[in-house]
Length: 210
Length: 210
DNA sequence: CGTACTTTTGAATCGCATCAAATCTGGTGG
DNA sequence: CCACCAGATTTGATGCGATTCAAAAGTACG
Image (cartoon, rainbow over all chains, first blue to last red; front, side, top):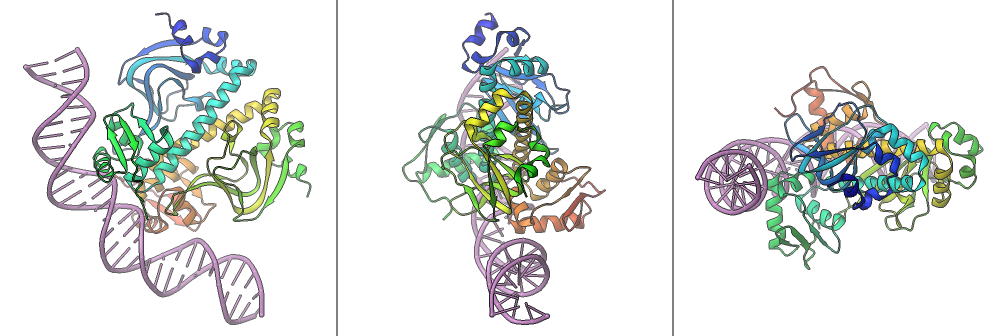
């Protein structure tokens, strides 16, 4: 399938002006593949067209923290200005990405008002989401973080998990064991309803920290 | 002192075009004063001219997490597009802020290329900083978070704290007791050199998690 | 069908939160 | 100038919750 056609189907990409599309590099990625590493020289802004890409950083002891999870849309936005990437980008599902050279991207931002607006909305959304994650990671207990996640990432008190629980645990700053146990407890006391990938708030909104 | 003159002295503000300055509202703030609260309808983008403002969110149990600390420069950037503020803004030191109505701000972004560039650089920096904080909060021990802070916020392996240790603890997602104790231990084993508000990495870079 | 990974449970340990309290600090008003 | 107060700093004791290590069962995929 022609990737130019593929792009048309993605809402986020509708705003990209033709002259920028012309210089984009299309690339298919397999699960587990690394797009760039911390310290690599910048090669532009990326955009997920299919699959999922994660920005991660690893501590020396091996535990990794997921900074961003992209399923469709831009990532590595900060790279427009810096000199080197400040985290790793790894495909967690097979798919495809587009790479836009920084110079052309900046030029397009200067020329196309629609594109610029879409870009700024995207950045604002990114900031907002990161703030929510900081707030969540500031919570002390697993139960609090889980409920906060459902509250802020979900709609109508429920989320559909698009990732494994192990990955979710990393996103919540927990070990997977702690997540499993907390989920079980929350389900037992009626705070949460857990059905496979669907997690919903129960009626009994337990006082998590009286 | 005329605030228009005051602005000139701030690097961040040099890029603001005259027509936007004209509609800015200058406001002095006392320490402890609240600028806006979570849920308030948006009243534009703010900029710290003097003093310090913090964006915080409070959990039901009272513990608060500091989402952003602004000492000179914009904050509440995400507010350009949303409908309501998603956190509280509290002055932690007396000072002054400027408020820019969202409409005029967006107009200026569309007109002035220099201003636009500066704004995007600012947003990119914000994203980068938030990612660093997420990564830090993902670390499990107090020692790791402290060292990470000095590494990523400091220059040349040292930071000058501009806030109380209690506030620093909140930023690190710790209780102040845990911070004090961890600092003491790190100083004892030579990992850190602590002198009042100056915190530097020592020569002995202890393996924090072997 | 085998292999790699996730999911799940168990037991022991460690670090942080919590509660308590004493000291120190800067700032206010008498 | 000093007494006083609110807040920050510091230390101690205790308990809880998450990490860690270990291992079994389930599951997806070539």
